Structure formats: C-alpha cells, structure tokens
Image (cartoon, rainbow, N blue to C red; front, side, top):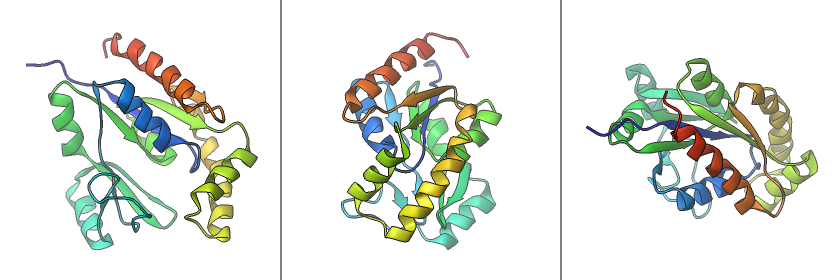
Length: 191
C-alpha cells in the first residue's frame, strides 16, 4: 500500500495570485494533484465546470452539507465553497499529495484541526491587489471595494498559516519555486 499523501493549502485574499501560483505548482510538481472545489457561484468567462470548479446550485450544496460530505466549507461573497472529503481522501490513499486553493476562513478551520500545511499568499500592497482585481474585470466597482475590505480581514488570518509568502509583482515563477522548495522540504518530514 502506498504512503498516504499530504494536504497542502494555498490561500490569500482575492486577487493575490492563488490561481496562477497553483497552476505553476502543479506544473513543477507531478506529485501534487488539485482537488476541484464545489461552489454555488456562477462561472466566470472561460471557466469550465469540473475543471475550475464544480458549479452546483444552493440546494445541492446544502444537501452535501447536511450529509457531512465536505471536509470544509464556507460562505464567501454570498456564495458557498467547499471541498468534498471523499475526493481528498481518495487521492491521499493513492499516495498523491493534494493542493487545495482555499479561502482564508477554510484554511483557518483546517489548520485548527491540524490537517494540512498551508501557504498564505499576499501581494506587496493594497494598490497591487486592487490592480489585480481590476485586471480580472469580472467584478463591479462595489464588489471590488468589498473584496478589498475583505482582504483586510483575510490578512488577520495569515497567522494561522504554516508559511506566509509574498507574491512579488511580475515574478510568479519565483514565488511558485519558493513554495515548491518548501513543499519538497515538508514532504521529507513525517507527519
């Protein structure tokens, strides 16, 4: 039977570059597998159901919650997000390591349960965070302000993360390689 895999979390405020860094980590590390999050939000342009997220309605999401299907779930910006425990356990039993891109609330929950190794990713400044959110151009101005306010509360949860990483503007590869180096070190530590 293969050795059970480890759970790695990548979190940070909206616009901090989590998705970009996650794609690079998956490219650099073939032992990592991303678990697709379930959400009640509508897909953004270019997002594919089952790849970027599992897009489901609120009724289905709440049924999963009642059944205890989620390892962790949270309401963020009026929508629900969660990761199914069975999806995670199946991959871990195969000896693969898991990468979850997760909201800071979810990271805090899992860290309090001592279930993962986490990375809190942040930009160098609020101005860069705002620039990233505007570049995405998927949000209205009022939503952008809400996301910036939430970033302040998200940052208060950074202390729950195993590692805090600054995503240097224009150097996502450098940031991803820094995280990958830490992951390699963590994989040698028995837990």
